[in-house]
Image (cartoon, protein in one colour):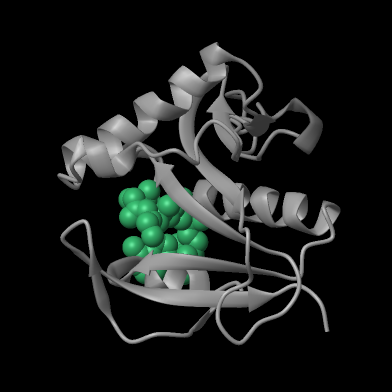
Length: 174
Ligand SMILES: CC(C)(COP(=O)(O)OP(=O)(O)OC[C@H]1O[C@@H](n2cnc3c(N)ncnc32)[C@H](O)[C@@H]1OP(=O)(O)O)[C@@H](O)C(=O)NCCC(=O)NCCS
């Protein structure tokens, strides 16, 4: 009698190879010149090369005192953003406010929640400092990115660096 073929069954779960894991995105605070150079390199590619923002606008005097975050995968920087504490609250607001800006993720890593992670990290720092709110200038095309997590328009559309923006705010207290 011919031998029967073994039934075509899936191997038990514990014998299956694990599906490839997406590399972890890690957030690190920029603390030294090496990290800061990595953040500037991302801003160079995203703002100056991709969006044609003039370098003299992209670099400003807030950088040395701002709180910067880097998103890294396997030690390579793929995104950045910064938090700048304001000297005065925006019009009509009270207390201590900060501005989030220079949010940039390399094009090859967009729409994988890297930007959201950076934004959440900057907000966490603002809360840690006890700040009352955050204001930002959102490029109109990226409006949904900020609206998604509670930022609301507080201005009509205006031009900044040749790109249409709106001011958006989020209160962190009350
Ligand atoms: C804006 C930016 C930082 C977003 O980073 P990202 O990692 O791609 O964003 P995320 O994946 O975390 O997006 C989270 C959600 O925000 C929204 N969103 C993100 N990018 C968006 C876009 N371009 N348009 C509309 N909604 C967007 C979506 O709802 C998205 O969720 P979904 O992908 O499940 O639909 C990134 O597109 C970027 O670097 N752009 C170029 C530089 C720039 O314009 N910076 C912002 C200046 S205001």
